[in-house]
Length: 417
Ligand code: HAM
Image (cartoon, rainbow, N blue to C red):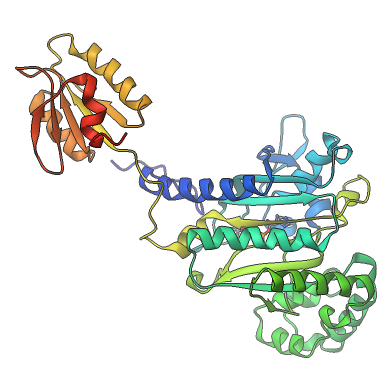
C-alpha cells in the first residue's frame, strides 16, 4: 500500500532481515571493545551547535555545509550530532572524568547526521561504531586503537581492506609547515579550484583532499607534513609504526592523508576498502591532543576512531550472514478450547530454554496455523490440540510423532540441550 510518505532523502528503514546483519556487526564490535577494556557511553542525539563549531572546526565541510541545525523554543541553536568525538569530550569534562584513572576508554554506537549528497555508502542519517581513548599520549594507545579496528574488520571478514597512515604533527609544530603550504598554494592560485582557493588561509590542508584535477596537480608537488616532522612528533610517529610492525598490521604511509575534521594532531589513519567505490573509507580516526583544551578543559591527549556500519555492510555484501537465529518453534492450538493458555505457558518455557517460540495470534484454524508456521520458517511445530495428546513435527523432515511435553526440549535437540 503506497502512502505519500517516504523516509526522507538520504535516510532508510532497517527492515528485519537487514537488522540481523547489523546486530552481528554491533555484537562483534561490542565483544572486541569490551575485551580491550572499553566501556560503552551514550550521549544525546543533539548538542549545542557551538560544540561542533569549536570542536570540529568552522572551516570544515561538516560545520560549514552539512549540519542539521535548528532552534529550540528557547531560541538556543542545537545541532543533530554529525560526529561523536566532540560530544564524548564534552561528556568527559562535564562528568569530571579527568579525575578518574587515565586513560578513560569509551566506546559508542549510534546514529549520526550529515546533510551530504546521498549516494551508495553516503547517507544523511548513518550509524557509527567508535572508540575514544582519552588521557594518554602513548603511541601504544594509537597502535592499539588501530589494531582494534583492524581486528573488527578482520573478524567480520570485510574484504580488500587497506590501512593508510599519516601524521599531522602537533599543533605547535604544524605552524611553520602550514605557512610553507599556504605559500605553495598562493604561488599556484590560478590552477586551484575555487573552493580550495577560498580556503587557502583558513584550511590549506584540505587541498590534499580535492578531486579537482588542477588542484591535484598542484598538490603533487606540495610539501607534505610527514616529511617535515621532527623531534617528539617524528619519534611518536616512528614508534606507532614500529608497534604496528611488531603486531603484524600492514599499512601504507600516505603523506597526503588528511581528514575532514580540524581536531586531529599527530597520528591519523584511514581504513579503505576497494569494494566500496567512491566512498572508499570504511572507518578512520586519529589523535586529537588539543580538542579537550579547545572545549575549555585541561590539556588532555586522546586518540580514537569511528567506523560506518552501513559501509561495513556494503563491503561485506549480500552474503553476509547476520546473527544466527535461534531454533524456531510454532505452537499450534485450537482457538475453540482453552489451549491458548497452555500455548502461552509453553512458549515462555521454550524461550527460557533458548528457543524462539510463537503461537497463533490471528484466530487461524489448524490448517492455517501450519501454513503460517511454514511461512515464518519454523523448525518445529508442536500441536497441542490433537487427538491422542501433543505431537511434534520436524518441519525439515516432515516427520510427526506424539510427544511428552516434559521431554519436548530433548526431543527437539536430540538430547543435546
Ligand atoms: P569521519 O571520518 O568523519 O570521522 O567518520 C567516520 C566514519 O563514518 C567514516 O569512515 C564512514 O565510514 C562513516 N561516515 C561518515 N559520513 C558518512 C555518511 N554520510 N554516510 C555513511 N557513513 C558515513 C569521525 O566521525 C570521527 N569522529 C572519528 C574519530 C573518532 N576520530 C577520533 N575519534
